[in-house]
Image 1: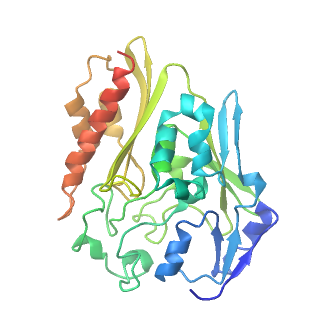
Image 2: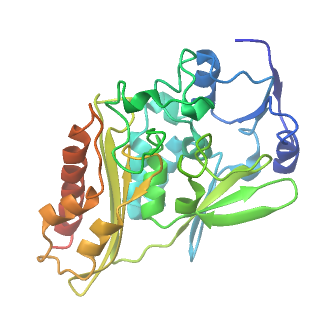
Length: 328
């Protein structure tokens, strides 16, 4: 690693001013569990690291009658241990608990988890000038693609690595982006962008913008959620496939549902076809096989990842069946 400057800003606005377009060598850092890997692997070579972890304005969890807000600097451990989240937001709890190891969750933050870069080994290697890094070739399309996309891939078949994003989208969360002069709010689902929009980016952040918080609407007693994750290793691994579902049932009928898939597309993937199969069904009228097939109906497997189609369909079926059993 080359020498670099570590800067502790006193405010979000100061941090924003330090990462303006004219200084491409300055990088934001919080827990550092992803960026430090990129630096060690030679993918990024910053001159300055702007430390966000000490900014109190980006930390903590606060509840209101309309929902709750989580600061982007809040650790995953704090999220997973919050009693209200444990009680009412099962998908978020399960997603937070699924990330890496306890040691990493103790330092890894919500904002960092949402903004982490792809784990594609071609992108992470200095030996490959892939499309994501400005090159002309996506090596994974014809190379070792066991963990790559089956949905939404085009000229780049990365998969988005964030578990928290999958749960947050199903929980209909919104995200706040703050710059030195302004802030904006948008749905978490709209925060992510695929390679068909900008092959070098995974989200809509512009230079100087910082993810500062996430807001989740309040749930009702008729709403339940779940997050399931399949991975190659039992611990400390990224999702081969994951699914988060938030479902509302009234009078024995599914009145609202959001299904989001992870580990299978360049962005967290809304399985709207699976949602359409579920909406309006009675608790005993759901065809689990139909739901699973709908979740992957647009899947296109690469040479080595056909297993993901069956895995994702099965994971979706199991998540729906588990949720329905809580009402039966």
